[in-house]
Length: 389
Ligand code: XIL
Image 1 (cartoon, rainbow, N blue to C red):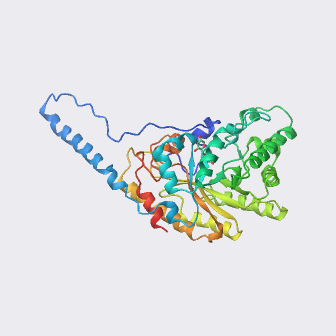
Image 2: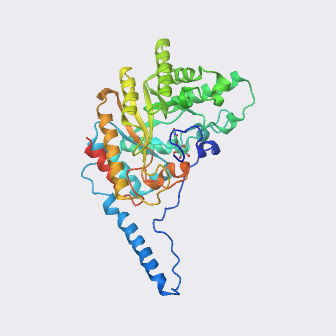
Image 3: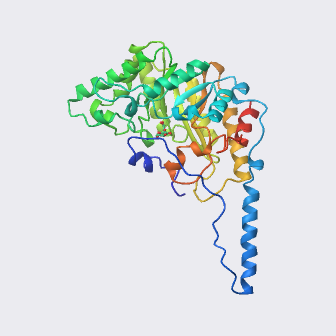
């Protein structure tokens, strides 16, 4: 399989881009570009007809009427649990975007603007401008904010990444940052992803700067520091892979059990749901959910997007893809609904429109992974969500 879904250890853009910025992709045009030259011989007529037929067929399968629908209920009306959206503040100024956000979602996450590389400008200096804009938007509408993420190896403040001081001084900067962020937003942020993606594939500690500078206990320390700063904020560990890699799942569970034995506060786990219509197997998602339920942890299906072009060989969205995606969303939401209500922290979609998705830049392929198309039309995936409930 090209770009094997399982090989998350070598993502292209993660390795190249240590200061992630919003990803904007041009619209993928569906029609093949055909240069219609004057016909020199009659023999070319059948070829022309064939090409015209191909174009007609493509127009037929991409007809938005076959991949979209008119909703009767919004996501948040249908769900008993919070339904979240990852957003970028400039998008909040677009009337159509904000109208859908207000109608459909009751939880918000900053897609990248509350990460340390954006907010921690220097030793003792912070830039909370985007954070404040997002928090004000949410406050005005009574929308919950889930903070993402205090520590992520892909979003370390550049000055800290280059910090030449001792390991103790490095750890001290991490503590100061965590406590500043948590304290400053204690009234507005319900929950934080304290550490994001601390494990590598197969459940080995990721060899990040944090591991190198602070040692294996750094995750526990960060949770303790966050808890000291605000004992009422909900603290999450967030990662991908637990829903398909059993070793990684077990490593995370061992970490949580160890936290519990040592009295270190952890309230929930974010299972990043970057999935495809046909992968991973639902039983593997169930396995992770069961293990978390057993431990009485809040469960967040965080970062949901559903690829329909995982092999990267399709250039337009078809009715079949729309239906496959609808069924997949339905399956995931069904599973989520089976979680005891008090452990349902919510389901968060990683972007609104297909063209907003980070995946386009990450994999470099066309895909249509979200619930709305570029024109804000409701895709069948939305129907899958609502009808599962
Ligand atoms: C991504 C955002 O979507 C991009 O806009 C940003 O440039 C890079 O980060 N796992 C995570 C998220 O936990 O923070 C990542 O978000 C996607 C992968």
